[in-house]
Length: 309
Image 1: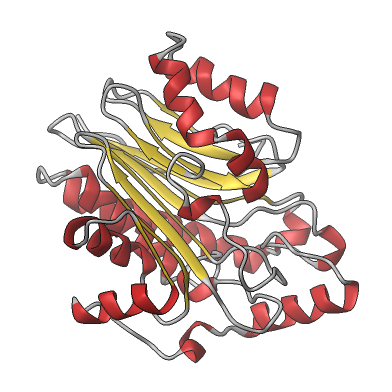
Image 2: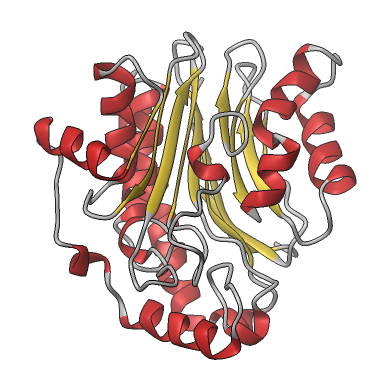
């Protein structure tokens, strides 16, 4: 048995705010992300390889707030964060503040496998990625007209935009991408990647880079990737607490996830995806929508956007 679950950000108050064309492009990218992971899992590949493949597809899409679709910070630069964790050995890799790594999630694996550290930031993370022959691009490669206009709106309105929508809807969207997987060997893994907040301070780091806040994996509990208002997820230690509620409070995955998202986090805070080694999967969110998808062995992929789906 194997499972891959993905998210491409929560929020999305209405279809009108998102736009029909962006929604269509996002749904295609979500299917491609699931398929990339399925190609690995279906032949006995690892959950680790699967989540990296799934996230990389979303990083390459201009629709999601990660990799090529990353938002601009207040200084006009796109700073990217990401993290990765494996459940069987609890190894992890993370980075923050990178600007030239084409796929930041791939660099987190280099950090995990080839250093004694968990997290690197900025230029040193980029040097390590280049040393290991990852794709390095000019910062302009990440630029899109949509994100440029979004920054201009945010600056004019003096607000911080949380990804998919306009300055007038700035409290309604939370952008990140992530994946969790269970492989045929019974191992789980989680990965998360983001461009952060539009018009954020250049030095801001969100939950997507932090093990225990935005990403966590432990075989005897769950693998989880969060998406939402990063500061809230950091303060609540959301990913780590989900695991702890299972391990220490004896909750099942569904009960623990529902308690965190629907009872503890404020309304419109965001959501998460999680899987356990028994094959249970959850995708709760307390916003108008969340880009999300699931593919289980022997079943057709499911991709959804809105709460009502």
